[in-house]
Image 1 (cartoon, rainbow over the protein chains, first blue to last red):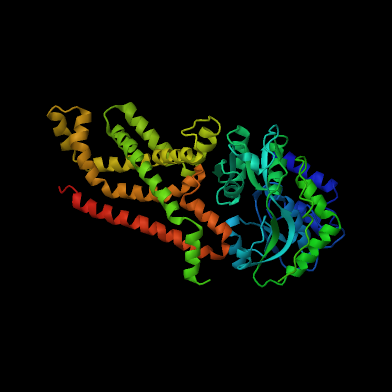
Image 2: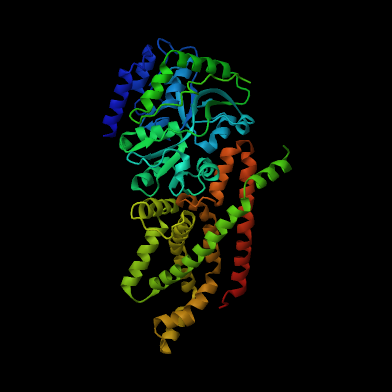
Length: 297
Length: 228
């Protein structure tokens, strides 16, 4: 079942014309790498030949966030993966030259400082505290904190309507506490180790909403197991600038920003957003997206 | 910011003592529960009734070999979310009780083994003498076996307590939101520029909590040991 599903997913993406990378190397890699766990490309620049880089590029992503960075057997899918693949191609690394590395939230700075990864695309919000230890390129996406509710639930239309309701979020994330402190003081908080756990509890009816960034919620709702069960409320109440994490003093920032701008200009960015959040009714906040990458420091 | 400013910033932005206090409370209630259940289990394992022996062995085998995180998730995702068994309307209280119950259930298996090892230090003649003067099993255990057994089991029980103190951090998996590991995760998420300092604060906190327990139980076990 899982294999059938992933074959369909790959076929669908191919049909969308996203994998228009014309190099034989890229296509060969996609078949050869089956089982070795390196990479399978889903999105690359139109007509780009992805050559020029030497060695491999180690990119940190989330392995457990469907729709953004997700490991499905030996393939990696999601919006972060698509953007990373495009950027890598522009930098001269084909899909076969990318090594995907799992970058859990708490380890991201350490992984960059130790050189375990060259760059990180992992729903990595640009903040001043983080800028003290790492560099950022981008942003390549502006997310906002939002709510995921059951499809048939019309009683919640924003954070203010959460009073007297139960809200789930992930341990260590500040998002739920922010809701309780500033927007709805009567809300009850449940903290779970992962978003999948939150979704299980939401489906069982013990909580009424799950909160985190809108695109993460859309990705969760778009997975085949959850399709049709949940919806994103669509009332974002924060601004999270997803950047590309780089080691301090990296010289790649300008090139990455150029690649992100190119991806937005040629329409691949839009397609990556759409294909990864299909069927959830989610559209990114149009006032802020697509973003313009900030100047490199 | 220099080191002193960083420390004072962290302590003023986050209530770190309150987080440790939650873990201490978890330890307290779970230790009481584990001691009661574990002692009963230990007696079951040395009792003359085969079905009770079997039950005690089965309990220890199952709970000693199941990871604590799995038990926590089972409690919240299975018992609470699907079976909808609720201890309190207030989420914070509800999950605190859940965490205490799971910690007690898990550590009871280790307490049982500590108590049993303590019972094994009591010479067989003591039990035989107790039975010879006409005491049934339970009074014999209560008056003769257990008082000597616990004095021999202080050191292993201390180890169980130390493991329990550190395992309270797993309560985060049961949605206890203000205990140390979830507070630490939140702090690292928001202040990644001070990650090593944050880690050191919590590591030091646990050293301060755990070292006295080791010192006290070691000296008690020396002082109270039954000299034979």
